[in-house]
Image (spheres, rainbow, N blue to C red):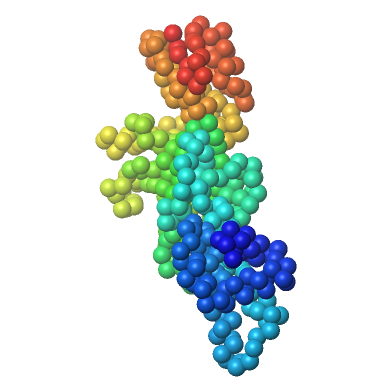
Length: 379
């Protein structure tokens, strides 16, 4: 049997599409003495190697059962054993179907999911699928534009250490994530979130955020939730809040919508005398240079409107508006008119294109611009 013929049959077998005749041919080939030596010289991808290992495992099981019973195993018994092991093959098959993109260059505008071993999967928007770990186990499902992780209590005793995944959303896109505890994270453009696939028992729930995220934290008084953003820690029990912590910004901001949070810099160990308490309707501003935290009253809708694809600017300097537009539309803006950098603007936009927004700024504020593909120049 040639390599091509073998892989085609192995592929059909993993998908449960082999006829009885094709299965007989496949098993007969696996039972032949030259099977091991012949496949060892084939140039196989990691996915194909997994198929070979699966069939070898089936063959070993068949031989073991044959020795125990000291009788010839009929094909129907072989089929039963194969059915037991087919789950292993399907898990590996779907894993490699989803995660073999780590071998190729990933487009910069792709939403990606990085597994604990560094393997990267491209997450398609508006998709519906099941995603797996490297062992072929089910991690969770994708439902449209949200990844939902499993919360299987039966696995609690087996989980001895945290296993992290990282979801990254590029400029120009948004996505959602539901953690294993039920916490929901809305991720804005240019955001990355690192989180455990499952939280440990008797331990704090901790995630890491770079960029902007709106979190609705599942209430659990026994297991506090800590969101780490740059050098700022936000500790909560159950609440709704927005984190804005892009690495290029000089400050990180936390806006509390509901509940209460305690903020600490990373030099503190969550002591009561070192915390800054935030109440709903307030914003905390963390200075990355001197680690100071200040607070002010705000209209929270202004800071959470991005969840619905809206852009709301209130008393915002033009230089900050430029950053938001670049992230939201995945564009580059060159501002040659630096005199307006500190000028304060007020504006609200829905799902308009960047052309509509720029024209509005020109009509209302006299800002001139030119567009060259994905680069905009303010004159």
